[in-house]
Image (tube, rainbow, N blue to C red; front, side, top):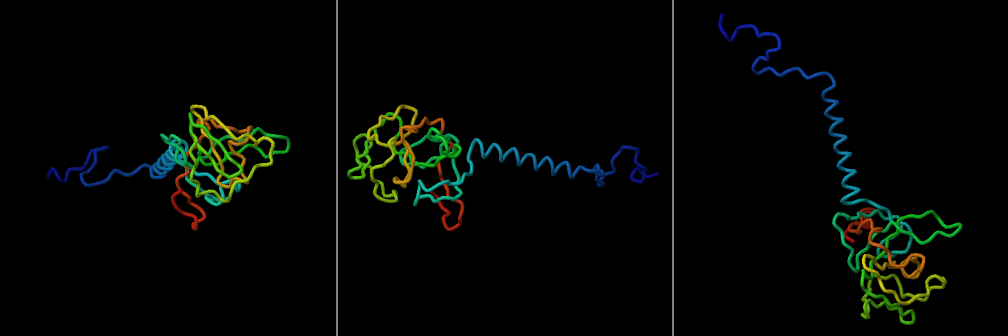
Length: 202
């Protein structure tokens, strides 16, 4: 008998013939792929970047209420002028809404000083006037008794933040918030995603 015509022994594969797949193997592979994608997404959106929604008018007109933005957090060190999201809110008073993340612009970092001249609507950092083309309108003196301070020394490891809509923003000017420890920073706003007419780098 020719060796090529010999019957195969049980358990022996015939050359050129695929081994039958076990029932459910394809479903198992899809489940593995799905779980891998979920784990990758969790790592990405917790350690590298994340999506968040702008809540409130304090950053008008740079960012508007309801916009969806992308934050970058991996290896991020705050710098003056950055727009950041912070997991920090003023001390709650009776009837205030629940704490939520806030989005503001970094005006000064640790070791710098901030002075505000409400008469001229100007902000000074280390004695130098800031050029602020991004603000919505001229800043006027706030009425809130907790926002009457005009000079701050920003501690190391902290940032002084303000909203671009200065007349409708609770920020580091408020003694209930003040300069904020950088540990509260969730990330830097880098990209506006939605609505599409606002899409673009921040």
